[in-house]
Length: 134
Image (tube, rainbow, N blue to C red; front, side, top):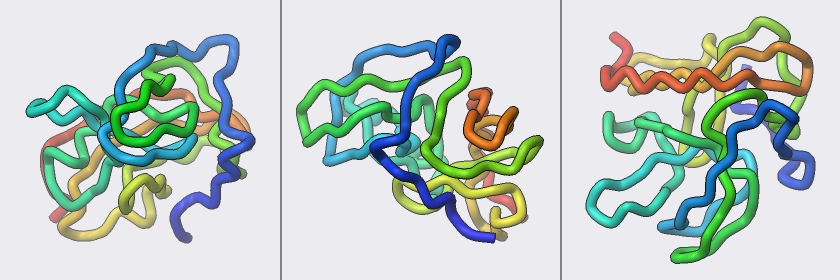
């Protein structure tokens, strides 16, 4: 398998999505998992190469440039603009990407994003473990 192929224009909140507004620390697109950098309080693309950068707290619902406000999903269900496998658990991958469980590799810092409840919706249950897979 591989990272999800997302269509940014199709990423959207659902009736159950918990939404808040944050400030982007770099250019981001809809559907990207984001972490909050403590040093400046801004949000950046999550990546599985370090405990800090893998500590996803939200998924972007819009486009933003550095310093711009952007709406993010922090809970509930979200339409990721991709075809999901029902019952599959999805994780933070490369910068701004999402991967299925089978693609989490040795040395990747593990952050669970949630479980697909339909072929379109991911129920968010974000859990940043802070540890790398052995």
